Length: 251
Image (cartoon, rainbow, N blue to C red; front, side, top):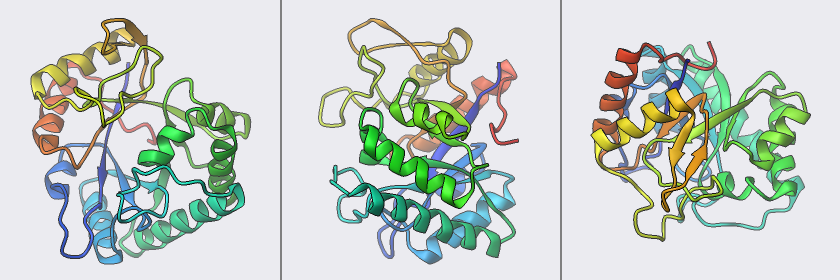
């Protein structure tokens, strides 16, 4: 049993500050760093990549819709060709920034509305896969177990990595409870740690209606914009270290 611990980072923009990246990067093993389309400005991305390199944390390109105002959480109907180009653009930008501080992009993770949409939208899932392959077919991709995205990625020869969410509630079908619904986001570090340990050891999580959902994650995500993110990540790392199961999936 091995599991990676990832977090969304680099999401501050100009004077707007979001999350405590410095603290998270001392705890997690992989960082999903925004690429400027839904969050993050060039200086922020460079600083975050540098901090990740300094802490030995794997750098991942967190690609999303071009939606700074909506933080990438609004569904946007982007033509497949444009979406592929957007993914290439974002990965390429972060790759250049990472290299400037001695790092490299080691994987790709879609963000927000894009992540949720490609669970079932085959055309958009394929468009993201095409973008990743065009940049580097050796890049692994993070996605929801059972999603169209992971299926298309693996069919295209990409390594698909099953991801679970530490601080999000699940629906019985394995999808995430929409943020608009009560109980969608969890905050208690002890409760979350117990949930994640069950995910890793048993490969299951309890859905919002009490049913059991199969997840078997290779990586577990903590959302950096959650006010409890650092406390959650620290508690998770402590529990997972005791179990001896923490390891970056890219190394």
